[in-house]
Length: 102
Image (tube, one colour):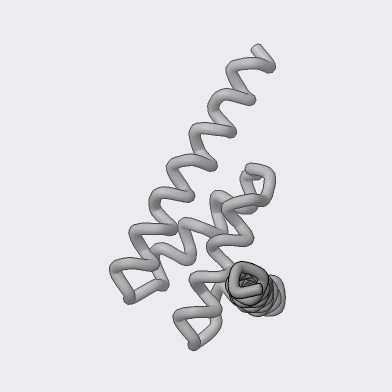
């Protein structure tokens, strides 16, 4: 009987922890999807989310030009560094595509 109570308590605790983790993940995902296009927003978190969204977008010349504009505009070093890394990755993807076309 005592083992049954312990197992029930452990199961309930795991259920609550899993529910909290799922809820947290859904809230973060909602915030990112809601603000993913706010690259020039006055709010740094929205700009950060937009960089995350653009990091998963396919490389294009327009996106490279947008990232260069953003880097020139951005004042926060952390966001500028993240954008620079993203720009480097986008340029490398475009270079590799150009080499494949040759």
